Length: 146
Image (cartoon, rainbow, N blue to C red; front, side, top):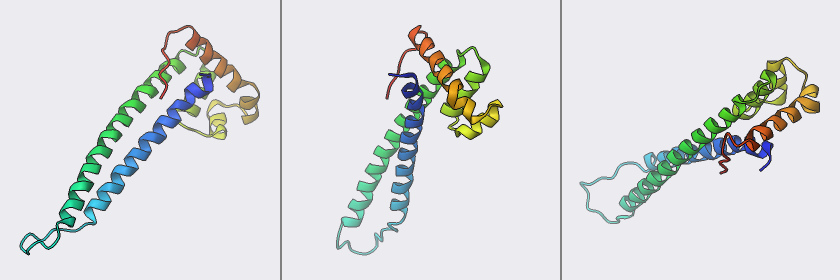
C-alpha cells in the first residue's frame, strides 16, 4: 500500500463511521414515527408490534456496527497520527496532520503552514509522502488496512 493510500484510510474510516451514525439516527427516527400501540383495544393485527420488534432489532445491529466502526476509526487514527508524529520536518508533519487527520482542504493547509498551495503540490506533499514511506518501511508502525 502506498503512503497516500495508507493516509487516506483515515478518511474512509471516518466516512464509514459517519454512515453507521446516520443509519442509527434514521432507524431511531423511524421507530419514533411509528406511534404508540393501544393495548386496551383488541388486537386485530400484530404487524405494528412485529414492525417495532423488527426495527428495534435493526437498531441494535446498527448500534453494534456503529460501535465497531468508532473503535476501528479511533484505532486507525491513532496509528496514523503516531506515524505522522515521526516525521522530523515540522512543516511536513503539520501538512500531513491537517490534510489527512483534520481533513482540511489544500488551501486551508497552505494557510496553516504558511506556504502556497502551489508549493504544497509541487514538492512539499511529495516530500511528506516519501517521509511516511520511509517510516513505514522501517517497520516502527504496522500497516492496519480496513
